[in-house]
Amino acid sequence: MKEPSMKDHKRLLLIDDDPNLILLVKDYLEFRGYDVSTAENGREALDILEQDIPDMIICDVMMPEMDGYTFVEQVRQTERTSWIPVLFLSAKGQSADRVKGLNKGADVYMVKPFEPEELVAQVESSLKQTIRWKEHQAKGGENGSRIQVPFDVQLTPTELKVVQFVARGLANREIAEELNVSQRTVESHVSNMLGKTNLHNRTELARWAIENQMA
Image (cartoon, rainbow, N blue to C red):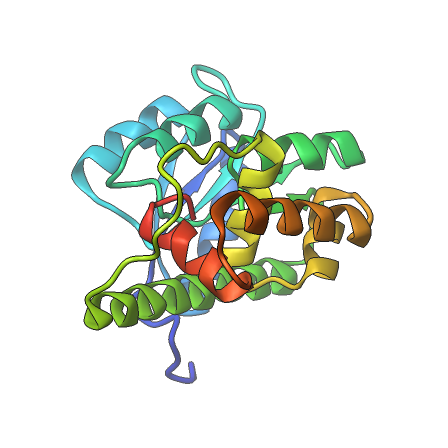
């Protein structure tokens, strides 16, 4: 018997060209209370997104027609889908592969083979983070004022990735682990962004990122 929780009625889009993996993962996630749609490649998934917006996307990296990298880049470039959390599944587990996946726009990178319970935990964590983003954004809207920064602020690609993690509520140590860099490097990026934006703390930095749809 399933226990009611925040995962009930949450819709996931699962993209993979391996029919066996699709079947196993779909069955497991549906058993855990999720509604799961599937696609065999990125191009088919984009067609699905034209009709329906899921709460989260789980996507293989290496696929025919359109791979995960290209698919996620298009998701991030489209306003109506840019906010959707994306979890990459890949057989490539080297640090360089993980960094590339995160830099391309994925929020989570998991290496195959993986434990189903870990997948569920990552999905639930990402969905909770999305709820926090929306609640934070709603509070900002209620206050009736937006964070003000200089109009010509330009972030480097790495700074953009760091501020996305900050907006998700990750600590510097956790961001360092995700990007495979030292905590001091992350702290330096955060400090540089505070200087560029004239903001005072990480909370303001996170709110600025959310208000400007960077997260």
